[in-house]
Image (cartoon, rainbow over all chains, first blue to last red; front, top):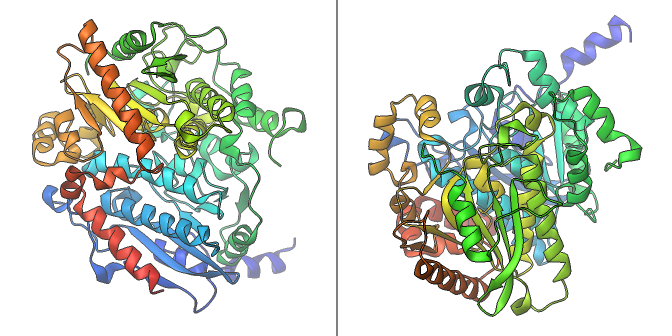
Length: 290
Length: 277
């Protein structure tokens, strides 16, 4: 590609990552079809943060938008990474499970309603600790209840990434879409360094972090489905494709024998090389989804 | 941190099944067996420490890759075998829980522990949704990703009313560091704010538990203790069979109506606005 054709495309594309959670969710819908539910004007905020001298937010960092995508009913639930690290508390968790459960209810009576989870989160909000953890368990349960009836699509755009308990919600989704700027894992690098030492994980090693948790690696090793550019139009088109897709006969998190065998085949005498693992897991001989 | 992590899990697995060794196909960190409970056979599952595990970061009783997929394997097998049976005949699943945490390791992150944990949670939830009564007995610790992987998808959760029981999102030291408090301040706060408490009595106030069980010394149960717990498990199985196969009971208990008021209000508001949109 020469410079004259490259530069205009780059400068005119609309970044998705630069949007906040609300704008991200809105951008996925057909024009004029969406509406926010239990928005900031409803003032449903965390009852636990003020008790600890922390300012709550009127939407508790969770945005629910219902509307149409590609002409089909859909609901998007976004966690705002800029509020308390996108953490899951009682209220944000309840919004998520309630929206998923309502999508299930509609889907069961023939109005298939896809759900898109926009996850930018460090996991459970420690100021609401056990209610956050319980919320994560309930979100997972609600994703699994909807999945047989309508697609559940996790979109991780970055730059917070998806860590902690919510990474399990990504893991049980029908599809996972990531950008190169997104990360997905159970434990973030700082947590591992803290718990297991710097020899186990040097959290200042940026290259290592991206090699393990980055979108390119997760898609490359088959644990996520699509790698998208940071381009709002392209992301919208990718999501629309999955919203309209036929339901899968089997989901990745049900492939217990395939992945159990792959884990059994790992050499654990030293650290695992991410590139090597990507090649092994995505090769035709060991199976894989695509 | 208390020193008994994983020991109580093994003690209660042994007490309820008469067995405390992994099968030859399973890793040394997972106990799985079928045993009699009341008039029927149940699948019992437990994750235990194994100092010789080939994954260094699970040796103290954490839940890692092999543990998650082994749990999922046993659950999927039982679901498949009972697929054609009526609901009343589907085998109960009893998760004996005593897990320190998920594994905090680089090997685990590289190979996708998030996904392994998801596969196990999926299998537990699938068993529940297929009509198997899934009961968790918290015999020691139930922390964070460890509990999400092993036990938190159960229809009914039982725990001993004992100082050694801790159900929480993160251990005290790390939670104190992240929320910028001292451990003493964190403990103090727990007395005022139930979801932050490390005390199982406060956990019970959240309305997520089916029952708190009274046993004098959970690490050394008497025959009478074991009989009583067996009885409670049978009650929980029957109650689960009578109830819904989702997790709605966690919002319907009297305690939940008090403590989870905000979440219940959000659900009601969202439902009302959903209908009108």
